[in-house]
Image 1: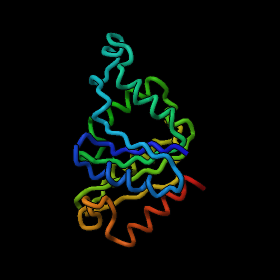
Image 2 (image 1 turned 90 degrees about the vertical axis):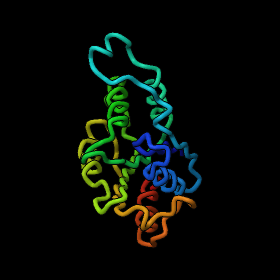
Image 3 (image 1 turned 180 degrees about the vertical axis):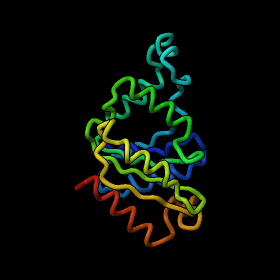
Image 4 (image 1 turned 45 degrees about the vertical axis):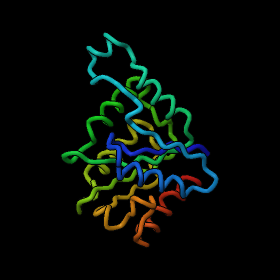
Length: 175
């Protein structure tokens, strides 16, 4: 099984990228590829830009990664209660290539924030709209107060309850 994992953020020290990588790594025998959204350069989406430039190379490369996967672990960063601008823009470009971008493949959605909200607003948006993009959401987990329950140095949770939640979410991908 090939799992594509990423944090929906362009932060170089993304807590969501760390969370996605850790969780995807819990799937026994999986080939995990962790994406960095910084590797997929695209202009700001508009129909006018699409007419002018067609489908940017970054969007095509991102979509090719999605096509290559058997499953996904996506951890969502939240900016002002919604998707990060970079992720939303890349997502919009990919949906123009094929709105059914997840092709009924299993998805685990995660979200994390340093504060008490755990990026639950963006997690609700992603799970609520998943069917439009043919994502088969198997689990969703929000991690509030991230730095209190996850060690960025080791790339692992320090809280046993969080470990159990993430293991259960990862297990849904191989079920």
